[in-house]
Length: 190
Image 1 (cartoon, helix red, strand yellow):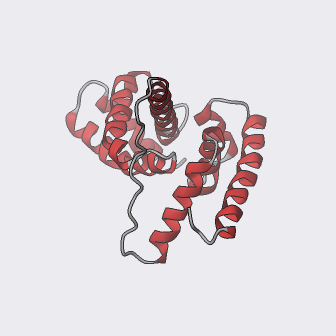
Image 2 (cartoon, rainbow, N blue to C red; image 1 turned 90 degrees about the vertical axis):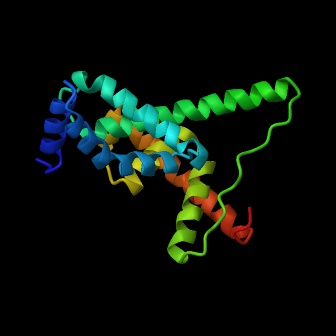
């Protein structure tokens, strides 16, 4: 059994009745995961705090229903992916409505690259490519390639059959590679 499963179940059990210390420990343990997943799902920095708050609100409300049949982190992945997708749909709807109403739509400002090492640049490029991928492909790709979840765990997170996960992963890898080649062909320029 994974070492983190037992403490998560214990914290979840204590947090449900309102143990504030257990809730804080659970929050602190999983906040980096939620932030990492949200960024990789394309959530803008300006929306990150709101998304994290919504994820943990859903977790808090749902703790009583967490049965411990899967890893707690799998449950967190699913809630975070769903909230990021919901946020993306809401933004798309607002942009479409603004366009229909003839209002100017200003895109979210691009993240300015810091004076970091090549690793920071590679992370920026990765996020750029992930941002261009179809959301269903991006979720599966990110969970498998970056978070190193098994196909079975991903199927539980995205709530679809294992064969669908395999198909999405195959398409996601092709899409990622296509975007990577396109970016390289134009010299890394946007």
